[in-house]
Length: 252
Image (cartoon, helix red, strand yellow):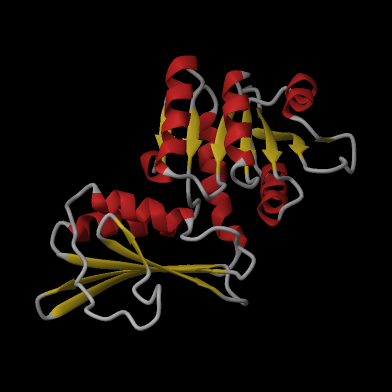
């Protein structure tokens, strides 16, 4: 009989943390062993620092839904302790991701970095990469709930990086910008527009423009439950992992 994967959750009091803990408890082949929380722990399964969590709960994998930049410090500390992080927190820049890569390379402790755990969102990026080979203009529009702390979202940035790796893009110039920011952010020649609205979980569309046509690739998550199959997939892949995995697409 296989030994269950021992899994801890950073950001256990957050919305995604709570969904993840429920999913871990219901899943086969894995065991929820403790949560990392800010402030006072609510019970014996919660810890205020990673050192105590690792020494007492002995996790194999740490699912991280904490808040950047604390998330990066937690992930680097976990890697140093031989615990494989599965990172779902957003706010990471290219330099931050590189730091994770270097930590994994020097330690041999693997890491899964996943800006989005929804299978449909991962496929949206995959299809957008293919479309980028055939269109010369692209804009990304993403929408999240009002309380989201960062913009653009990690998924939008990951999409822009993936598309930008295919070819160079240039945005059509605007002679007179009447309101600052009207054209959105420019990420390597790719326009990125962030909307923050109540009543939404996540929405993203990637709009390609060509000669006489447009192609829109769109994904919506209406519930955080849509992320749980991807989280469990990443946890299973993380046990024993010795490399850096950038995006859930590498695991599909």
